Image 1 (cartoon, helix red, strand yellow):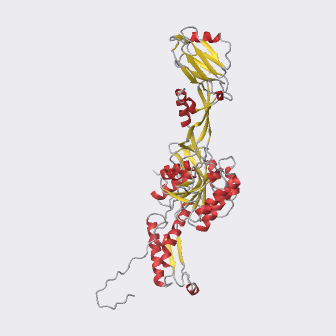
Image 2: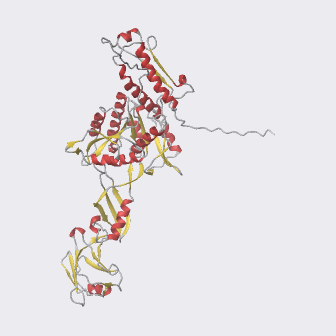
Image 3: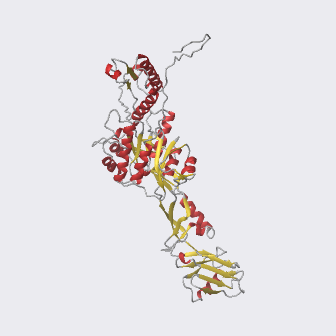
Length: 543
């Protein structure tokens, strides 16, 4: 109480409004994985929790995507197929897919560079670092799905343990992309803390393209020929049947107009007396009379076409062959038409990713537009062409309801005219009536964390009716707002929630003597309409 000692006019501000509860963020994922760079400005950012808001910020801090490699099989200049060796580290693409699906601010923990092999220890260290950060609410382990099943499941168990200890976060898991992935996951994840996680399957064929370098695109085939075309494309083609590693060349000297002559040094074929206007047939006729052909050959493309005068040397490039290959960069100038076709085919290859990144983006979008109490399901995914495996309603029965141990798995399915949708909203604890649904668990996480932070003001305050009233009014006001938005079930406030606090209600005299102030909060959480049943019957004619 103020003491007034000097005669004067004094003003005082009397607080009348109660403390308020600020709603914490609900969809702030933390991605753990490997990045191109683990240093920034000369300082290590490995195992450092780094907050980003855009993909550009990720690129500035951690670099770009790990390049893929390709083998393009070409037979007689016809592209037969493209084989992709996907990169083993896909965190960059996962972040990209997350933002494409409406994701907002997130955290990234780099546990190594692209030169490192994925290993369990790195992910466990990343989880340990994450446990010291307060804001993240979703744990993302998409890259860990590349570990072997035993190691991956152990990492998932440790993530669930962290959720149980901190009670402010939730795990989004991927079912590994293998034939027995679902059964393996259910057997390996254990039975502890299942209410803090949800699993999704199958993997997704995304619209994202691979990053690559021209040197990592190998062109090979079954023709066994390495070819180069002279200046007149319709006339002749010089063929070398050895290996591209010999770096064969064709040198053309104009010389005097007459019968072409040839000299073969093993890897260089020199043609002399190629006069202006000489026909392709004339060149090949002279070639057929030459004895020392070695691995070279000359093929007629159009016998009546003329070979213009050309003086110079060219490297031969290849369209493939057993043991004969070249890189995309080798044909960029010499065979621009084939180069463009190969680039076009490579750009058609799309990345396959675990679904968790896209699901996290859907969580963020749903929370922002509808609220954390809305099930993040029946939501269309962006940047996704289709699931890699088609799941039918019959297949999903076994995923949604597990008669053995109740571990529900959420399906991602493609629907005609709708696209790819998340078609499930269950936690791993599918047999628990309280924590069966993802939005119920995450709603309680949000309310618990929000009220916990807001109640900090009461620490060391007098444990009496005045403080109890402030705390109760603060929490009731917060829950009333959630109820008005549709986050709690009930036609009246009394049906939707209650807050009890006080001596004889939630505390005994011993509690007060021991410094405990106990508030009891009850919530009627809304649950998703998972099964909509429409019953029809015949109405008999009455007149």
